[in-house]
Length: 81
Image 1 (tube, rainbow, N blue to C red):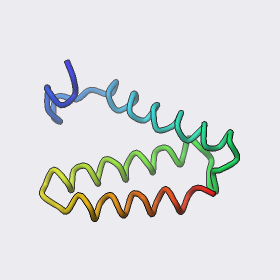
Image 2 (image 1 turned 90 degrees about the vertical axis):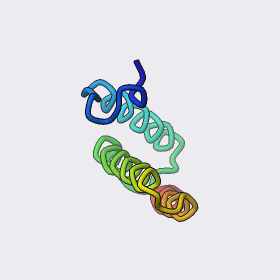
Image 3 (image 1 turned 30 degrees about the vertical axis):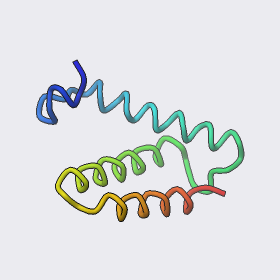
Image 4 (image 1 turned 45 degrees about the vertical axis):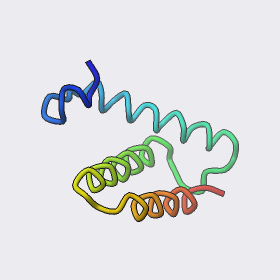
């Protein structure tokens, strides 16, 4: 069953690890291409995952999606060449 179908309270560690794993692998690809300004990848993945989670939560709580997208775009610009 998907995370969204079970709800936040029922989410297990596996969903968090899977999401973190996807972020980590994306950052490894950016790093391998020589486009990552900061690191190490494993530590940065935790921070990026936290930013994405908080932005998604803010949007779900009614914040402006456009503003959140702008912040995320800015973060990506700040950590990449």
